[in-house]
Image (tube, rainbow, N blue to C red; front, side, top):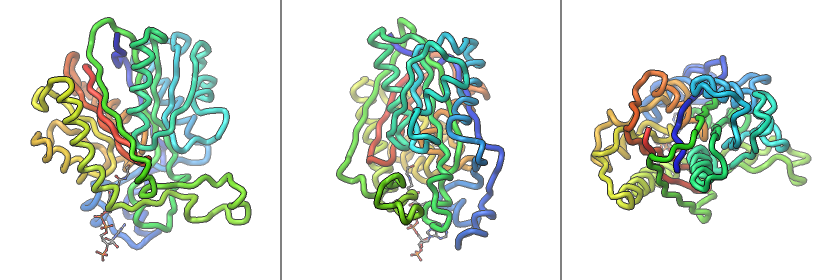
Length: 321
Ligand code: UT7
């Protein structure tokens, strides 16, 4: 048994900050950001646009798209590194906001690989016959973790949420490859502010996202193709049989490099970071929602999803649309 995506949804904050706005905050330019990242704009949450608010709006849109009621959900998993509250978990807040009274709810933190790992977790529950109707969300308000004085990070990130509804089908294919490299965790970090050592200095730089961009870039362009090749080899498939490669939207240059290493046409690698920046765990489900609503995905097509980020962690999943 596998979970088939039967509905997608997304929600992004109303406010849009373009690159020119960032050039007012740090020493950068629209030209540099576009050229080095592919990002032109990002959506930035207002105070009331919390992670749970964005997540529940994306969830409601996905339920509507799937044509199912919130009460039918048996499990909700939200991937996030930027929850509004440490407890209750964002998934429980979503449950309350959408009225999914029958669902078991928990969150998962795997940074930019979060949605992929949440999807894999949901699929494992489905394969075991434990749950049949599952909501998987990726939701972030990274603007709360962004140091707006650090040009090496603030130009990349944005806020938003995406969600998919999975329904059990007897047939269909799902396979996954996942890896973590804790040893290299220091290249992308954000320390919790809720520690005694920060009582006198709640705005210490290490409590915002810090990144060795070059190292993360090198990691992504080598490990993502490796994971995809490992997955396809295991599944006895070839890249030519894959219709869409839906990658985490971190940097357009990373996506181009992966396409080149796999010797595949960029046409198979949709990108939307121009509009949203890097929304961490939300980027893959937001992109899936856009593709779905534009009717660019056809039943029976093969998709490879791939996430990578802090941990370090990365992986690739194969699914049939
Ligand atoms: O979600 C998963 C995690 N994140 C990622 O996947 C991000 C991976 N890394 C990246 O996307 C890229 O490394 C960045 C976009 C963050 C940086 O691009 P880069 O091409 O690696 O730039 P760099 O750090 O090597 O810097 C090149 C130059 C430097 O100047 P010099 O030393 O050559 O004179 C930087 O000081 O660009 C300068 N620079 C900037 N200039 C204008 C760095 N940031 C900026 C900026 N605006 N925002």
